[in-house]
Length: 209
Ligand SMILES: C[S@@+](CC[C@H](N)C(=O)[O-])C[C@H]1O[C@@H](n2cnc3c(N)ncnc32)[C@H](O)[C@@H]1O
Image (cartoon, rainbow, N blue to C red; front, side, top):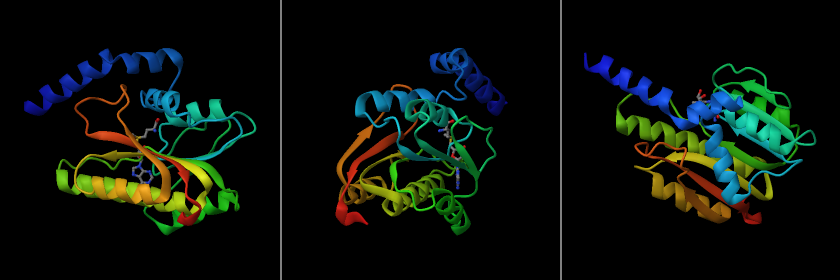
């Protein structure tokens, strides 16, 4: 009974959500697209011709924004554990980012090309057990940071979703050791009741690699 009410409430909120309506109108696959647009407006992350990896890309809202902004001269790889429909201008790879095979697939696709930007909107399926969910999401963020250290150009940028809770302060501290500037942002399109925020690392230090 309670569950039915909750899912009805979620559905009502979803169909009335201005970002859901806007995404439908403007042809974006997810309301998440507006989070990336807003972060980019403030922090100027996206530039034509960039090489970018988009982690946790499905269903592809961020990939659509990235493809548009980096244009034909850019390189874009979209990665997710779930299958995802093609986005013009992006190479889509399916795999589990926690596994070495995924990193091998990404390295092969990059063929040694250094990246200007790594973005990660990865989030695990929520089990409802807060401590376990937090640990799993921090683990994905840490893996994304490690991947960035290995593949970004010196001076490259990083954007990652993280959840406030255990491990958050340590992660911000680790990111400060890697990037010259670190900002934590909560875009308007991110729901207030969610503890999600986005960390932006700008300018990877030469000493990080
Ligand atoms: C919030 S959604 C991303 C939305 C996307 N940025 C967009 O704009 O459409 C989070 C994604 O992280 C992916 N994900 C979760 N765990 C993953 C893993 N271990 N490896 C790869 N992707 C993962 C999920 O499958 C999901 O598609």
